[in-house]
Length: 172
Image (cartoon, rainbow, N blue to C red; front, side, top):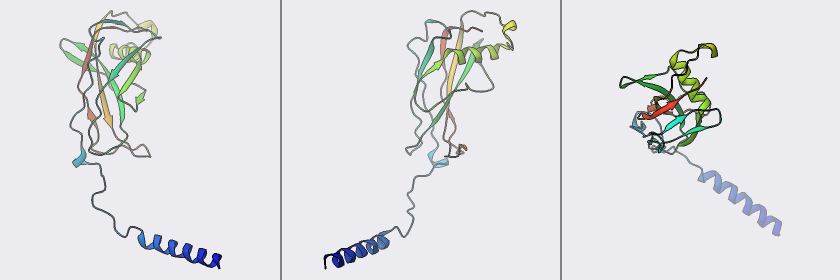
């Protein structure tokens, strides 16, 4: 008798779940695109931006920034670009550092920064390298959103403001 009640109750529960399933899709599902394009995000000026920084293989440079507001909670990918300040304008490289970042507080390897500076200076080999001394180095961050298959979601790319380190010296 108890088994019959249990089976009947279980059958009723399964039928109730089938009828309770969503029949229609809601129009207020979060979407990305032109209506959710972030307008800005800000890289914070480093506390050591005015100090002399000698890049070495053992140290790193810390950067922090605000998260872009896309209007929905999502995972954002960040890439850092390095440039050299020359005569008041920034000479940017043609790409970003190799390492991408998933958070807004990162320690960037001095090795990657030094490689980017050497590339900007046109040094292709260690024999070409000439110590250029302390110079003003600029950095900015690019943010975007990618799908689970690593394809860029159009309309989600945004560049931050530029911050500078007044006295930074690279190495080969």
